[in-house]
Length: 91
Image 1 (tube, rainbow, N blue to C red):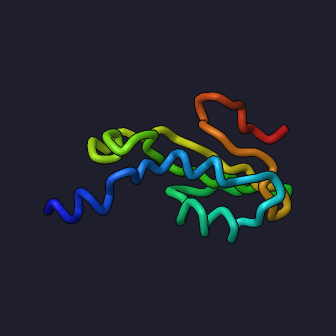
Image 2 (spheres, rainbow, N blue to C red):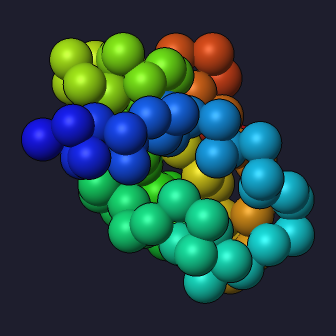
């Protein structure tokens, strides 16, 4: 059990968002963040990827997460961030 705890140490997931950049493909995003928790595709080339990520190791252990999004337009990252901070509706 101690080995599992040590292996997970420092495994906050939200900081991985800092590795994203505008113009990445969905494959790039999935390689960084993993499979999204949910997706939506309202049309017109728009796809929204939703992730539940923890900001700290302690939050991950306690299963405390925030919802983050990646907004893809025509297969490329157009914007990303925490859902509570940004309006992600189709503009």
